[in-house]
Length: 380
Picture 1 (cartoon, rainbow, N blue to C red):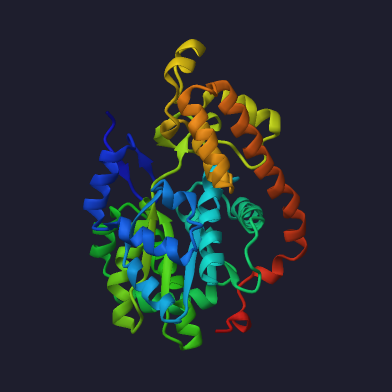
Picture 2 (picture 1 turned 90 degrees about the vertical axis):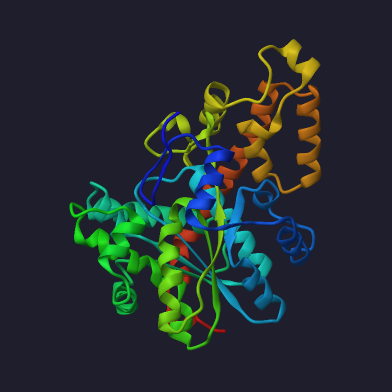
């Protein structure tokens, strides 16, 4: 078994329940309890997101304080982001569907940070290439349907003046030894990479810094990004702000199953947003990890295991009608649906989702400025 290595820039090794439990202990986060889940469910009026039901988002830091504020009528805001290093696949986009659910459920403002500077510092990619990825990625993300009045997109390069002003406050309170210890950096890393965490921490307090109103920030992210926000939780109280709260996800699986994550560099591991209906179907049929049996006869007799089946999981993430999900689950588990049929059902659902994204992209292109960060839009 390959040794697990999880950093903000690299994830390798087998991903399973045991490895996630090790990460929870290593990073010092809390698992989302059944009581906390029920509390969220009550606020969501019984319409809990599939990622919470299936414990894809499984851990947190002080999520209870966010819920306390919400129930008292005190506003909080959301912050998430994307490192634009290439074209997006469905594994990149699905966590944003969860953030969209959070925005709609809690009627919250949202900051989306595009860390184009980081990708230049850590990747062998030109600024011109990164600018192209940044523009395309943000259009893909916004095509999910975020509220333009409450969504504020930040490009680090474009909003560098604002971000740098506050990043120096962070940088003044973080030592080089802390960055080395938390992120595993060495003397051979460039100084831009050492400074970048200060830039990524800024959105965790940017809205209260600008508006002068005390409010908490909730950050949805995959567990590999946790080092940034451990540092943020240490620094922000020194600057007079609340510690940011987090809701933390596992990695969405690659087509081949939970032992790896989708990767832009491995075309066979991922479904890209520009994949045609035919390509999606071929990838699922050829590569998708199945919870089914070796033969149709065994499948009909013993049924499948939907809980480890890539096609069923993707279908369940995208299908909003829970009754349909439950029915497919029952039929697949009982053997009424075969693996090939499950893959075909998932292929249609995924393709419908991608076609909706592609259709909405054109409208987003025409109105992109409505979403860009502008202090005049920060009305609370």
